[in-house]
Length: 342
Ligand code: SF4
Ligand code: SF4
Ligand code: SF4
Image 1 (cartoon, rainbow, N blue to C red):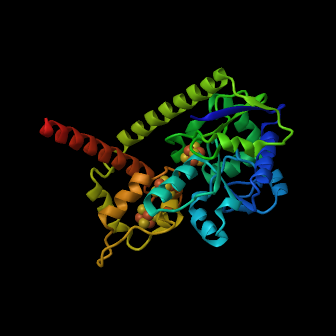
Image 2 (image 1 turned 45 degrees about the horizontal axis):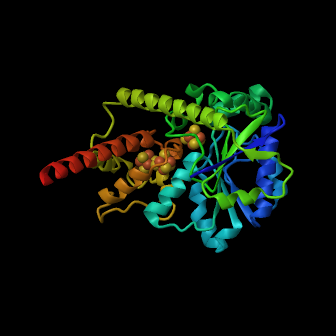
Image 3 (image 1 turned 45 degrees about the vertical axis):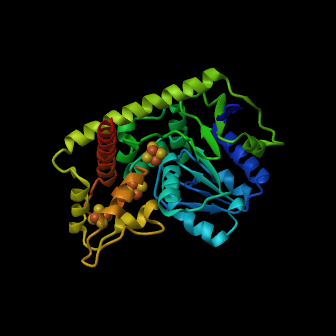
């Protein structure tokens, strides 16, 4: 059972989140925290490794820009530090999904890593982000604009990166600490969700005003998240219909579509799921089906691959489509084996 708390924000949700993170840093006795974003307006390559809680003053989880998937950097960080219990990782929902994929596919052990996930209000394509920051005057203004619409789940979704428009879920869940803003009156309060009750102690001895969350607030959050997920699912289906003539119809077709890529591998170099091991190839250079299936099945939908693909291949859409095909095939084969048994 999850444990929900409500934190009063006193009209400063961003400041409150920074204070929550500083408290977690202190109580969790962390040495460092990996963060996917900071407050700088620059289009710099993320993530950032912070070594002092003071550096969190510059942390801005709602800057609408994503230049890399933070999960891609976790295996190397765990390897270097060798003490996962002293490391924190702040992740977007698609980054947390990717980390879970690495655990499943590659046996990455993240025991002790303190994962913190926050509801994502969406990110713009890089050029759009630059243009909007200039128009608004600063990244703070752009962030405030995004936060104003948190209650409705974000702003102008059709302007977001295409991965965000079809995001499986921009809501935080499954981390040790989950910060909820979607659907909430964030100038008054935000939600914190802990899958494990003992992790509530990470907030001990702080000046934050915290109490058990109202069931109404939790419901409001969950209803808005469900609406966003349904909307994204509809957009995804529309996009698939529009791409009917280029969608790979089978896993074999998907594997074959990589033949034209030659030795490119740019999508794999940025994909968190390929951080430990690239999909295997035969002696002739062709990708093996098992590797591509595992990759496609765990795709977190972050869209980083598409941003670097010189052929502009919508890989996350291809993968989501193939994943659905594989699911349907496995349901059909389950049903037929049951009917044979009967
Ligand atoms: S894909 Fe989802 S979680 Fe990732 S940046 Fe976009 S909206 Fe956020
Ligand atoms: S395949 Fe692309 S969308 Fe999927 S996790 Fe990797 S980089 Fe993200
Ligand atoms: S980045 Fe594009 S062209 Fe390169 S291997 Fe990936 S899908 Fe192929």
